[in-house]
Amino acid sequence: MLDSSIKTQLKAYLEKLVQPIELVASLDDSATAQEMRSLLADIAELSDKVSLREDGQAARRPSFGIARAGQNPRIHFAGIPMGHEFTSLVLALLQSGGHPPKVEAEVVEQIKGLDGKFSFETFISLSCHNCPDVVQALNTMAVLNPNVEAVMIDGGVFQQEVEERQIMGVPAIYLNGQAFGSGRMELGEILAKVDTGAAARDAAKLSDKEVFDVLVVGGGPAGAAAAIYAARKGIRTGVVAERFGGQVLDTLGIENFISVKETEGPKLAMALEQHVREYEVDIMNLQRAAALKPAANGQPAEVTLANGAVLKSKTVILSTGARWREMNVPGEAEYRTKGVAYCPHCDGPLFKGKRVAVIGGGNSGVEAAIDLAGIVAHVTLLEFGKEMRADAVLQKKLLSLPNVTVITEAQTTEVTGDGQKVNGLKYKDRVSGEEKTVALEGIFVQIGLLPNTDWLKGAVELSDRGEIVINAKGETSAEGVFAAGDCTTVPYKQIIIAMGEGAKASLSAFDHLIRSSAPA
Picture 1 (spheres, rainbow, N blue to C red):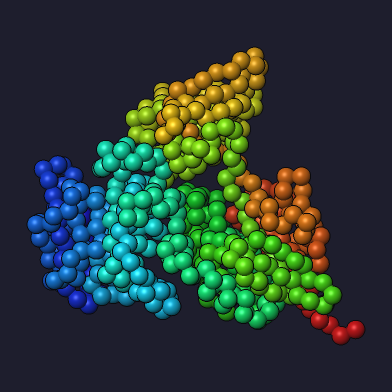
Picture 2: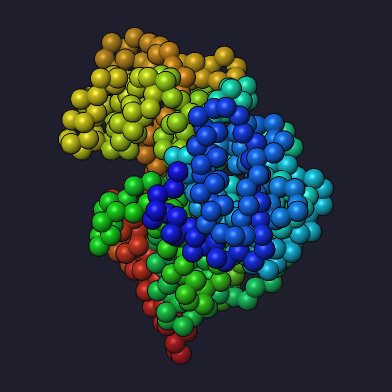
Protein backbone atom coordinates (compact mmCIF):
# COMPACT_ATOMS: atom_id res chain seq x y z
CA MET A 1 0.00 0.00 0.00
CA LEU A 2 2.80 2.42 0.93
CA ASP A 3 5.79 2.82 -1.36
CA SER A 4 9.32 2.54 -0.02
CA SER A 5 9.90 6.29 0.14
CA ILE A 6 6.80 6.93 2.26
CA LYS A 7 7.63 3.95 4.47
CA THR A 8 11.08 5.38 5.16
CA GLN A 9 9.64 8.77 6.11
CA LEU A 10 6.86 7.26 8.24
CA LYS A 11 9.30 4.96 10.04
CA ALA A 12 11.32 8.03 11.05
CA TYR A 13 8.18 9.73 12.38
CA LEU A 14 7.12 6.67 14.35
CA GLU A 15 10.41 6.74 16.24
CA LYS A 16 8.86 9.71 18.10
CA LEU A 17 6.23 7.45 19.71
CA VAL A 18 6.51 7.56 23.47
CA GLN A 19 4.00 4.82 24.31
CA PRO A 20 2.66 1.76 22.42
CA ILE A 21 -0.44 2.22 20.29
CA GLU A 22 -2.96 -0.13 18.70
CA LEU A 23 -4.63 0.00 15.30
CA VAL A 24 -8.09 -1.52 15.73
CA ALA A 25 -9.66 -2.47 12.39
CA SER A 26 -13.34 -3.11 11.65
CA LEU A 27 -13.30 -4.67 8.19
CA ASP A 28 -15.61 -6.31 5.67
CA ASP A 29 -15.13 -8.11 2.36
CA SER A 30 -14.86 -4.99 0.19
CA ALA A 31 -11.87 -4.00 -1.95
CA THR A 32 -11.50 -0.89 0.21
CA ALA A 33 -11.18 -3.10 3.29
CA GLN A 34 -8.37 -5.03 1.64
CA GLU A 35 -6.54 -1.79 0.90
CA MET A 36 -7.10 -0.67 4.48
CA ARG A 37 -5.74 -3.96 5.86
CA SER A 38 -2.64 -3.54 3.69
CA LEU A 39 -2.12 0.05 4.86
CA LEU A 40 -2.45 -0.87 8.54
CA ALA A 41 -0.13 -3.85 8.16
CA ASP A 42 2.48 -1.61 6.54
CA ILE A 43 2.25 0.84 9.44
CA ALA A 44 2.48 -1.89 12.09
CA GLU A 45 5.62 -3.28 10.47
CA LEU A 46 7.44 0.04 10.81
CA SER A 47 7.55 0.22 14.62
CA ASP A 48 7.59 -2.22 17.52
CA LYS A 49 5.37 0.28 19.35
CA VAL A 50 2.52 -0.24 16.86
CA SER A 51 0.30 -3.34 16.85
CA LEU A 52 -2.67 -4.29 14.69
CA ARG A 53 -5.80 -6.22 15.54
CA GLU A 54 -8.90 -6.82 13.41
CA ASP A 55 -11.59 -7.39 16.04
CA GLY A 56 -13.01 -3.87 15.97
CA GLN A 57 -16.74 -3.47 16.55
CA ALA A 58 -17.33 -0.18 14.71
CA ALA A 59 -20.63 0.09 12.85
CA ARG A 60 -19.00 1.69 9.81
CA ARG A 61 -16.99 -0.83 7.83
CA PRO A 62 -14.33 -0.62 6.67
CA SER A 63 -12.86 1.65 9.33
CA PHE A 64 -10.17 1.65 11.97
CA GLY A 65 -9.40 3.34 15.25
CA ILE A 66 -6.16 4.45 16.85
CA ALA A 67 -5.62 4.25 20.59
CA ARG A 68 -2.97 3.97 23.24
CA ALA A 69 -2.49 0.28 24.08
CA GLY A 70 -5.13 -0.86 26.56
CA GLN A 71 -7.55 1.99 25.78
CA ASN A 72 -10.61 2.17 23.56
CA PRO A 73 -10.05 4.20 20.36
CA ARG A 74 -11.36 7.76 20.34
CA ILE A 75 -9.91 8.59 16.92
CA HIS A 76 -11.43 6.76 13.96
CA PHE A 77 -10.95 6.77 10.19
CA ALA A 78 -13.88 5.47 8.12
CA GLY A 79 -12.08 5.28 4.82
CA ILE A 80 -8.43 5.27 3.80
CA PRO A 81 -6.74 8.52 4.88
CA MET A 82 -4.47 9.10 1.93
CA GLY A 83 -4.14 12.19 -0.25
CA HIS A 84 -4.61 15.36 1.79
CA GLU A 85 -5.61 13.26 4.83
CA PHE A 86 -2.34 11.31 5.12
CA THR A 87 -0.95 14.03 7.39
CA SER A 88 -4.03 13.61 9.60
CA LEU A 89 -3.19 9.92 9.92
CA VAL A 90 0.45 10.56 10.82
CA LEU A 91 -0.45 13.15 13.45
CA ALA A 92 -3.10 10.85 14.93
CA LEU A 93 -0.51 8.07 15.26
CA LEU A 94 2.04 10.33 16.93
CA GLN A 95 -0.35 12.11 19.29
CA SER A 96 -2.03 8.85 20.34
CA GLY A 97 1.45 7.56 21.17
CA GLY A 98 2.25 10.44 23.48
CA HIS A 99 3.97 12.89 21.13
CA PRO A 100 2.61 16.31 22.22
CA PRO A 101 0.44 18.22 19.76
CA LYS A 102 1.63 21.65 18.68
CA VAL A 103 -1.01 23.52 20.63
CA GLU A 104 -0.56 26.39 23.08
CA ALA A 105 -0.66 25.42 26.75
CA GLU A 106 -3.79 27.46 27.48
CA VAL A 107 -5.62 25.77 24.58
CA VAL A 108 -4.61 22.35 25.91
CA GLU A 109 -6.11 23.26 29.27
CA GLN A 110 -9.26 24.56 27.60
CA ILE A 111 -9.71 21.25 25.76
CA LYS A 112 -9.07 19.20 28.87
CA GLY A 113 -11.62 21.28 30.76
CA LEU A 114 -14.51 20.67 28.35
CA ASP A 115 -17.46 19.17 30.19
CA GLY A 116 -19.87 16.75 28.55
CA LYS A 117 -19.76 14.12 25.82
CA PHE A 118 -18.68 15.19 22.34
CA SER A 119 -18.99 12.73 19.46
CA PHE A 120 -17.81 14.37 16.22
CA GLU A 121 -18.29 13.05 12.68
CA THR A 122 -16.55 14.79 9.79
CA PHE A 123 -17.47 13.94 6.21
CA ILE A 124 -14.59 14.64 3.85
CA SER A 125 -13.31 14.07 0.34
CA LEU A 126 -9.69 13.08 -0.15
CA SER A 127 -9.21 15.91 -2.66
CA CYS A 128 -10.39 18.56 -0.18
CA HIS A 129 -7.55 20.74 1.07
CA ASN A 130 -9.69 22.30 3.82
CA CYS A 131 -10.86 19.03 5.36
CA PRO A 132 -7.58 18.04 7.09
CA ASP A 133 -7.69 21.17 9.29
CA VAL A 134 -11.01 20.02 10.74
CA VAL A 135 -10.00 16.36 11.06
CA GLN A 136 -6.71 17.22 12.77
CA ALA A 137 -8.33 19.70 15.16
CA LEU A 138 -10.96 17.19 16.28
CA ASN A 139 -8.39 14.40 16.58
CA THR A 140 -6.29 16.61 18.84
CA MET A 141 -9.31 17.24 21.02
CA ALA A 142 -9.97 13.49 21.20
CA VAL A 143 -6.37 12.81 22.26
CA LEU A 144 -6.48 15.39 25.05
CA ASN A 145 -9.98 14.81 26.42
CA PRO A 146 -11.44 11.30 27.05
CA ASN A 147 -14.94 12.73 26.59
CA VAL A 148 -14.27 13.59 22.93
CA GLU A 149 -14.51 11.11 20.06
CA ALA A 150 -13.78 11.94 16.41
CA VAL A 151 -14.33 10.03 13.19
CA MET A 152 -13.27 11.00 9.67
CA ILE A 153 -15.71 9.67 7.07
CA ASP A 154 -14.74 9.50 3.39
CA GLY A 155 -17.89 10.48 1.53
CA GLY A 156 -16.70 8.57 -1.52
CA VAL A 157 -16.69 5.32 0.46
CA PHE A 158 -19.87 5.87 2.48
CA GLN A 159 -22.01 7.31 -0.31
CA GLN A 160 -25.29 5.98 1.06
CA GLU A 161 -24.78 7.87 4.31
CA VAL A 162 -23.90 11.00 2.35
CA GLU A 163 -27.15 10.66 0.40
CA GLU A 164 -29.21 10.00 3.52
CA ARG A 165 -27.85 13.12 5.25
CA GLN A 166 -28.09 15.19 2.06
CA ILE A 167 -24.44 16.20 2.33
CA MET A 168 -23.34 18.22 -0.70
CA GLY A 169 -20.33 20.08 0.64
CA VAL A 170 -17.26 19.15 2.65
CA PRO A 171 -16.05 19.23 5.29
CA ALA A 172 -19.45 18.61 6.88
CA ILE A 173 -19.24 18.31 10.66
CA TYR A 174 -21.75 16.69 12.99
CA LEU A 175 -21.73 16.77 16.79
CA ASN A 176 -23.72 14.14 18.65
CA GLY A 177 -25.69 13.44 15.49
CA GLN A 178 -26.64 17.06 14.77
CA ALA A 179 -25.19 19.39 12.12
CA PHE A 180 -22.39 21.41 13.75
CA GLY A 181 -20.58 23.23 10.95
CA SER A 182 -19.49 23.17 7.32
CA GLY A 183 -16.38 24.36 5.57
CA ARG A 184 -12.91 24.93 6.94
CA MET A 185 -12.77 25.36 10.72
CA GLU A 186 -9.72 25.75 12.91
CA LEU A 187 -9.32 24.39 16.42
CA GLY A 188 -10.07 27.76 17.98
CA GLU A 189 -13.33 28.11 16.05
CA ILE A 190 -14.49 24.67 17.13
CA LEU A 191 -13.62 25.35 20.75
CA ALA A 192 -15.44 28.68 20.64
CA LYS A 193 -18.63 26.87 19.60
CA VAL A 194 -18.47 24.14 22.23
CA ASP A 195 -17.01 26.24 25.06
CA THR A 196 -19.68 28.89 25.52
CA GLY A 197 -17.66 31.00 27.94
CA ALA A 198 -14.65 31.31 25.65
CA ALA A 199 -15.79 34.43 23.78
CA ALA A 200 -16.24 36.51 26.93
CA ARG A 201 -12.84 35.41 28.28
CA ASP A 202 -11.17 36.27 24.97
CA ALA A 203 -12.80 39.69 24.83
CA ALA A 204 -11.58 40.58 28.32
CA LYS A 205 -8.00 39.53 27.54
CA LEU A 206 -7.91 41.36 24.23
CA SER A 207 -9.28 44.61 25.65
CA ASP A 208 -6.51 44.61 28.26
CA LYS A 209 -3.74 44.75 25.65
CA GLU A 210 -1.51 47.81 25.50
CA VAL A 211 -1.75 50.30 22.65
CA PHE A 212 -0.08 49.05 19.46
CA ASP A 213 2.11 51.18 17.23
CA VAL A 214 0.78 49.32 14.18
CA LEU A 215 -2.32 47.13 14.19
CA VAL A 216 -2.84 45.07 11.03
CA VAL A 217 -6.41 43.94 10.41
CA GLY A 218 -6.30 40.84 8.20
CA GLY A 219 -3.90 37.91 7.96
CA GLY A 220 -3.59 37.27 4.23
CA PRO A 221 -0.53 38.02 2.07
CA ALA A 222 -0.91 41.79 2.44
CA GLY A 223 -1.39 41.59 6.21
CA ALA A 224 1.53 39.21 6.68
CA ALA A 225 3.87 41.45 4.67
CA ALA A 226 2.70 44.54 6.57
CA ALA A 227 3.27 42.84 9.94
CA ILE A 228 6.78 41.67 9.04
CA TYR A 229 7.84 45.09 7.77
CA ALA A 230 6.45 46.78 10.88
CA ALA A 231 8.00 44.31 13.32
CA ARG A 232 11.39 44.68 11.67
CA LYS A 233 11.27 48.37 12.61
CA GLY A 234 11.20 47.35 16.27
CA ILE A 235 7.77 48.81 16.97
CA ARG A 236 4.83 47.19 18.81
CA THR A 237 2.93 45.26 16.12
CA GLY A 238 -0.30 43.29 16.25
CA VAL A 239 -2.28 41.29 13.70
CA VAL A 240 -5.97 40.58 14.19
CA ALA A 241 -7.40 38.15 11.64
CA GLU A 242 -10.59 36.22 11.13
CA ARG A 243 -8.42 33.39 9.78
CA PHE A 244 -4.72 33.71 9.16
CA GLY A 245 -3.99 33.10 5.48
CA GLY A 246 -7.28 34.55 4.26
CA GLN A 247 -8.44 33.75 0.74
CA VAL A 248 -5.14 31.97 0.04
CA LEU A 249 -6.41 29.07 2.15
CA ASP A 250 -9.10 28.46 -0.48
CA THR A 251 -6.68 28.55 -3.42
CA LEU A 252 -5.36 25.19 -4.54
CA GLY A 253 -2.77 25.64 -7.27
CA ILE A 254 -0.46 28.69 -7.34
CA GLU A 255 1.93 28.83 -10.27
CA ASN A 256 2.66 32.56 -10.65
CA PHE A 257 4.32 33.36 -7.32
CA ILE A 258 7.67 34.51 -8.63
CA SER A 259 10.65 32.30 -7.63
CA VAL A 260 8.33 29.50 -6.50
CA LYS A 261 7.47 27.34 -9.51
CA GLU A 262 4.34 25.92 -7.93
CA THR A 263 2.73 25.61 -4.53
CA GLU A 264 -0.67 25.24 -2.89
CA GLY A 265 -2.63 27.88 -1.00
CA PRO A 266 -2.63 26.15 2.42
CA LYS A 267 1.14 25.63 2.19
CA LEU A 268 1.73 29.28 1.37
CA ALA A 269 -0.61 30.36 4.18
CA MET A 270 1.33 28.21 6.65
CA ALA A 271 4.62 29.70 5.42
CA LEU A 272 3.23 33.22 5.84
CA GLU A 273 2.22 32.56 9.44
CA GLN A 274 5.55 30.89 10.27
CA HIS A 275 7.43 33.87 8.86
CA VAL A 276 5.36 36.36 10.86
CA ARG A 277 5.92 34.33 14.03
CA GLU A 278 9.67 34.73 13.58
CA TYR A 279 9.17 38.30 14.82
CA GLU A 280 7.61 39.81 17.94
CA VAL A 281 4.15 40.12 16.48
CA ASP A 282 1.03 39.68 18.62
CA ILE A 283 -1.16 37.44 16.44
CA MET A 284 -4.83 37.46 17.42
CA ASN A 285 -6.37 34.83 15.15
CA LEU A 286 -10.03 33.85 14.74
CA GLN A 287 -11.19 37.36 15.58
CA ARG A 288 -13.51 39.35 13.32
CA ALA A 289 -13.30 43.13 13.19
CA ALA A 290 -16.67 44.86 13.50
CA ALA A 291 -15.96 48.61 13.63
CA LEU A 292 -13.16 51.16 13.20
CA LYS A 293 -12.84 54.49 14.98
CA PRO A 294 -9.88 56.42 13.51
CA ALA A 295 -7.50 58.31 15.79
CA ALA A 296 -8.67 61.79 16.81
CA ASN A 297 -7.80 64.50 19.33
CA GLY A 298 -4.62 62.76 20.39
CA GLN A 299 -6.41 59.48 21.12
CA PRO A 300 -5.38 56.26 19.35
CA ALA A 301 -7.54 54.50 16.76
CA GLU A 302 -9.90 51.83 18.04
CA VAL A 303 -10.85 48.56 16.35
CA THR A 304 -13.88 46.89 17.91
CA LEU A 305 -14.14 43.13 17.43
CA ALA A 306 -17.26 41.00 17.02
CA ASN A 307 -16.87 39.65 20.57
CA GLY A 308 -16.95 43.19 21.98
CA ALA A 309 -13.22 43.60 22.61
CA VAL A 310 -11.60 46.92 21.71
CA LEU A 311 -8.01 47.11 20.43
CA LYS A 312 -6.16 50.44 20.35
CA SER A 313 -3.35 51.48 18.03
CA LYS A 314 -1.51 54.60 16.87
CA THR A 315 -1.85 53.44 13.25
CA VAL A 316 -4.00 50.83 11.53
CA ILE A 317 -3.39 48.89 8.32
CA LEU A 318 -6.53 47.41 6.76
CA SER A 319 -5.87 44.23 4.77
CA THR A 320 -9.15 42.36 5.09
CA GLY A 321 -9.05 40.85 1.60
CA ALA A 322 -12.09 39.61 -0.27
CA ARG A 323 -14.58 36.75 -0.36
CA TRP A 324 -16.39 34.79 -3.05
CA ARG A 325 -18.97 36.90 -4.87
CA GLU A 326 -22.47 35.43 -4.66
CA MET A 327 -25.09 35.40 -7.42
CA ASN A 328 -27.73 36.90 -5.10
CA VAL A 329 -30.59 35.07 -6.80
CA PRO A 330 -33.53 33.23 -5.21
CA GLY A 331 -32.57 29.80 -3.93
CA GLU A 332 -28.81 30.42 -3.64
CA ALA A 333 -28.77 30.93 0.12
CA GLU A 334 -31.39 28.25 0.73
CA TYR A 335 -29.37 25.59 -1.11
CA ARG A 336 -25.86 26.59 -0.04
CA THR A 337 -24.02 23.33 0.89
CA LYS A 338 -27.05 21.49 -0.55
CA GLY A 339 -25.88 21.73 -4.13
CA VAL A 340 -24.65 25.32 -4.31
CA ALA A 341 -20.88 25.33 -3.79
CA TYR A 342 -17.93 27.67 -4.23
CA CYS A 343 -14.92 25.31 -4.10
CA PRO A 344 -14.77 22.75 -6.94
CA HIS A 345 -11.62 21.15 -5.52
CA CYS A 346 -13.28 20.46 -2.17
CA ASP A 347 -16.81 19.56 -3.17
CA GLY A 348 -16.37 18.24 -6.71
CA PRO A 349 -15.95 14.57 -5.70
CA LEU A 350 -19.37 14.61 -4.03
CA PHE A 351 -20.95 15.13 -7.46
CA LYS A 352 -19.33 12.14 -9.16
CA GLY A 353 -21.48 11.00 -12.07
CA LYS A 354 -23.93 13.90 -11.68
CA ARG A 355 -24.76 16.99 -13.74
CA VAL A 356 -23.44 20.32 -12.57
CA ALA A 357 -23.17 23.94 -13.70
CA VAL A 358 -20.33 26.42 -13.34
CA ILE A 359 -21.31 30.08 -13.20
CA GLY A 360 -18.61 32.32 -14.66
CA GLY A 361 -16.37 32.22 -17.71
CA GLY A 362 -13.22 33.79 -16.28
CA ASN A 363 -10.07 31.82 -15.46
CA SER A 364 -11.46 30.45 -12.20
CA GLY A 365 -14.73 29.37 -13.81
CA VAL A 366 -13.11 27.66 -16.78
CA GLU A 367 -10.50 25.96 -14.58
CA ALA A 368 -13.33 24.72 -12.34
CA ALA A 369 -15.25 23.36 -15.33
CA ILE A 370 -12.15 21.54 -16.61
CA ASP A 371 -11.51 19.95 -13.21
CA LEU A 372 -15.15 18.95 -12.74
CA ALA A 373 -15.43 17.45 -16.21
CA GLY A 374 -13.10 14.66 -15.12
CA ILE A 375 -15.40 13.76 -12.21
CA VAL A 376 -19.01 14.52 -13.07
CA ALA A 377 -21.29 13.32 -15.86
CA HIS A 378 -21.74 16.71 -17.49
CA VAL A 379 -20.76 20.36 -16.95
CA THR A 380 -22.74 23.34 -18.18
CA LEU A 381 -20.79 26.60 -18.02
CA LEU A 382 -22.85 29.80 -18.03
CA GLU A 383 -21.18 33.10 -18.94
CA PHE A 384 -22.99 36.43 -18.61
CA GLY A 385 -21.10 38.12 -21.46
CA LYS A 386 -20.85 37.48 -25.18
CA GLU A 387 -17.77 35.31 -24.76
CA MET A 388 -15.69 33.68 -22.04
CA ARG A 389 -12.98 35.85 -20.46
CA ALA A 390 -10.54 33.08 -19.53
CA ASP A 391 -7.08 32.72 -21.08
CA ALA A 392 -7.14 31.29 -24.59
CA VAL A 393 -5.28 28.12 -23.58
CA LEU A 394 -7.90 27.36 -20.91
CA GLN A 395 -10.78 27.99 -23.32
CA LYS A 396 -9.20 25.68 -25.89
CA LYS A 397 -8.86 22.91 -23.31
CA LEU A 398 -12.43 23.35 -22.08
CA LEU A 399 -13.95 23.26 -25.55
CA SER A 400 -12.08 20.03 -26.32
CA LEU A 401 -13.91 18.15 -23.57
CA PRO A 402 -16.85 15.99 -24.71
CA ASN A 403 -19.02 16.43 -21.60
CA VAL A 404 -19.03 20.24 -21.41
CA THR A 405 -21.60 22.71 -22.74
CA VAL A 406 -20.86 26.44 -22.81
CA ILE A 407 -23.73 28.93 -22.82
CA THR A 408 -22.91 32.62 -23.25
CA GLU A 409 -25.18 35.65 -22.79
CA ALA A 410 -26.79 33.76 -19.89
CA GLN A 411 -28.05 35.56 -16.78
CA THR A 412 -28.74 33.15 -13.90
CA THR A 413 -32.07 34.08 -12.32
CA GLU A 414 -32.88 31.32 -9.82
CA VAL A 415 -31.60 28.17 -8.14
CA THR A 416 -34.31 25.54 -7.93
CA GLY A 417 -34.62 22.55 -5.61
CA ASP A 418 -36.93 20.04 -4.01
CA GLY A 419 -36.63 21.50 -0.53
CA GLN A 420 -33.69 19.25 0.33
CA LYS A 421 -31.19 19.78 -2.49
CA VAL A 422 -30.63 21.50 -5.82
CA ASN A 423 -32.41 20.09 -8.87
CA GLY A 424 -31.75 22.81 -11.43
CA LEU A 425 -31.29 26.47 -12.28
CA LYS A 426 -33.09 29.05 -14.36
CA TYR A 427 -31.38 31.57 -16.60
CA LYS A 428 -32.45 34.29 -19.03
CA ASP A 429 -31.09 34.33 -22.57
CA ARG A 430 -29.87 37.95 -22.75
CA VAL A 431 -30.32 38.03 -26.53
CA SER A 432 -33.84 36.64 -26.88
CA GLY A 433 -35.06 37.37 -23.35
CA GLU A 434 -36.32 33.80 -23.10
CA GLU A 435 -36.32 32.10 -19.68
CA LYS A 436 -34.70 28.66 -19.74
CA THR A 437 -34.12 25.84 -17.25
CA VAL A 438 -31.22 23.43 -16.82
CA ALA A 439 -31.77 20.23 -14.80
CA LEU A 440 -28.77 19.42 -12.61
CA GLU A 441 -27.62 18.47 -9.11
CA GLY A 442 -24.85 20.97 -8.39
CA ILE A 443 -23.93 24.61 -9.05
CA PHE A 444 -20.40 25.96 -8.62
CA VAL A 445 -20.27 29.77 -8.40
CA GLN A 446 -17.08 31.32 -9.80
CA ILE A 447 -17.87 34.99 -10.50
CA GLY A 448 -15.10 36.82 -8.71
CA LEU A 449 -14.60 38.44 -5.33
CA LEU A 450 -16.14 41.07 -3.05
CA PRO A 451 -14.00 43.18 -0.67
CA ASN A 452 -14.52 42.51 3.05
CA THR A 453 -15.25 46.13 3.90
CA ASP A 454 -18.90 46.28 5.01
CA TRP A 455 -17.76 47.04 8.56
CA LEU A 456 -15.82 50.13 7.39
CA LYS A 457 -18.71 52.18 5.98
CA GLY A 458 -18.49 55.70 7.39
CA ALA A 459 -14.99 55.19 8.77
CA VAL A 460 -12.98 55.45 5.53
CA GLU A 461 -13.86 56.34 1.95
CA LEU A 462 -15.05 53.37 -0.12
CA SER A 463 -15.47 53.14 -3.88
CA ASP A 464 -18.79 52.30 -5.50
CA ARG A 465 -17.58 48.67 -5.55
CA GLY A 466 -16.91 48.72 -1.81
CA GLU A 467 -13.12 48.91 -2.13
CA ILE A 468 -11.09 51.07 0.25
CA VAL A 469 -9.88 54.14 -1.64
CA ILE A 470 -6.11 54.56 -1.26
CA ASN A 471 -3.41 56.72 -2.80
CA ALA A 472 0.02 55.68 -4.06
CA LYS A 473 1.32 55.39 -0.47
CA GLY A 474 -1.53 53.21 0.77
CA GLU A 475 -3.12 56.07 2.72
CA THR A 476 -6.88 56.10 3.21
CA SER A 477 -9.16 59.07 3.80
CA ALA A 478 -8.60 58.72 7.57
CA GLU A 479 -5.33 59.98 9.03
CA GLY A 480 -3.18 57.19 10.43
CA VAL A 481 -5.22 54.50 8.65
CA PHE A 482 -3.65 52.67 5.72
CA ALA A 483 -4.87 49.80 3.53
CA ALA A 484 -3.44 47.14 1.25
CA GLY A 485 -4.40 44.17 -0.89
CA ASP A 486 -7.62 42.90 -2.44
CA CYS A 487 -9.84 45.09 -0.23
CA THR A 488 -8.48 48.27 -1.86
CA THR A 489 -8.76 50.11 -5.18
CA VAL A 490 -5.36 48.84 -6.31
CA PRO A 491 -5.80 47.12 -9.70
CA TYR A 492 -5.00 43.45 -10.34
CA LYS A 493 -5.89 41.29 -7.35
CA GLN A 494 -2.85 39.01 -7.14
CA ILE A 495 -0.98 37.46 -4.19
CA ILE A 496 2.35 38.96 -5.16
CA ILE A 497 0.83 42.41 -5.63
CA ALA A 498 -0.92 42.20 -2.26
CA MET A 499 2.39 41.44 -0.56
CA GLY A 500 4.04 44.46 -2.13
CA GLU A 501 1.11 46.66 -1.17
CA GLY A 502 1.28 45.38 2.40
CA ALA A 503 4.96 46.26 2.64
CA LYS A 504 4.24 49.71 1.19
CA ALA A 505 1.42 50.40 3.65
CA SER A 506 3.65 49.34 6.54
CA LEU A 507 6.46 51.66 5.46
CA SER A 508 3.93 54.49 5.13
CA ALA A 509 2.59 53.77 8.61
CA PHE A 510 6.11 53.86 10.05
CA ASP A 511 6.77 57.16 8.27
CA HIS A 512 3.55 58.52 9.76
CA LEU A 513 4.61 57.44 13.26
CA ILE A 514 7.98 59.17 12.90
CA ARG A 515 6.46 62.42 11.67
CA SER A 516 3.58 62.50 14.14
CA SER A 517 5.88 61.87 17.12
CA ALA A 518 8.58 64.35 16.09
CA PRO A 519 8.87 67.43 18.36
CA ALA A 520 7.32 70.63 17.00
